[in-house]
Image 1 (cartoon, rainbow over the protein chains, first blue to last red):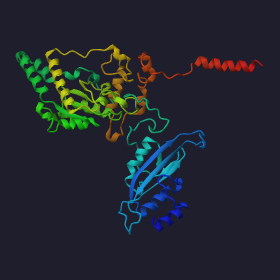
Image 2 (cartoon, rainbow over the protein chains, first blue to last red; image 1 turned 45 degrees about the vertical axis):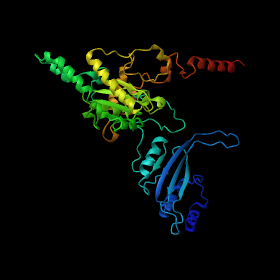
Image 3 (cartoon, chains in turn blue, red; image 1 turned 45 degrees about the horizontal axis):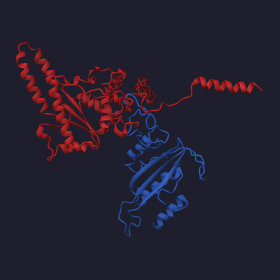
Image 4 (cartoon, rainbow over the protein chains, first blue to last red; image 1 turned 180 degrees about the horizontal axis):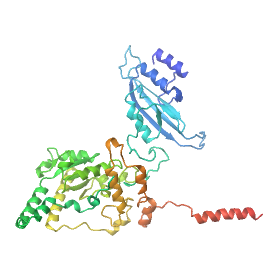
Length: 163
Length: 278
């Protein structure tokens, strides 16, 4: 990691220890972090992935957890790594933990490709992206009840008249 | 939205020959009708215009049939990309709940006479996606299927065989020697999908109406879709595991057990009595 990126990350997050998908970022720092990385060469929006975590009791020493959602974002520096681009060909990913009903900032203002990706996550998991210009369902019908990839969605949920 | 005539959903009507009926209605042409029927028979069976309703991996095999190694042109079949030119719809692949009204709408755009082939186990029964929320358990819940081609996916040879079976079926229909498939009571023990087939006698007529309404309700950009309230209004169809378990008692489907209201009341009353006793 280049020194100036390290310094910028430390200034924003308080640390520059980056582990892929291991770092949970506060919700209010999601958009500043993405902006910072985009301005330093991470211009390729790879993916966004939301997951649903239902409430878990304490088990085998692990503490009990409340129901929450996690949104992982992956950015990539598409340039070749050389002296001018010390971060070239590297990916950077982080997670944001959300309470049920909490919205996360949309990245469509930074990456046009985030549009349909965030629509898909909204459709299947039910995470709301604040600031998205057209947050409609992408895969299921417009009138589909519920969000199918939540853990509490029954796999054989009937949907008349086709099921 | 005006409800359209339901006859398109009735199996068997897909074999009507409107041109022949018109010719038969003209007096003096009866003499020619026999040879005209043979001519129509020959023409319709040897020039299938196939509409590839290909949604998944079966579509790859469908494409292979059109290539030089198998060359479906040898039997006069042409694959066209518009339903208005076609008379055979080959449904190749999984049909989802979102796709099903579109398939129905394309089917309605095909001119008579028309036939439908269910290619692959997903189109036949939904296969292992059958119980998933988003998949239609077999296209014969809303289309009159003529030929089923099993396989996952079927070989191009199998599709070729299916087209030849369809030729045989059309010839037998017009010769009056067609026999519908036998009913096998032992298959009732199998776990069937909750949605009744088109040929099932106890199929709810509301189901056909609702499917047609859903197909007709597709608007521009998906915005004028059937409202969820309209669908829920016919939601008391024979759908769901409890209905399935009641309809097929020998099947392995376990109904969802709910405590009876009487037992609940007794439990509450017993607790109150116990509280009052001391």
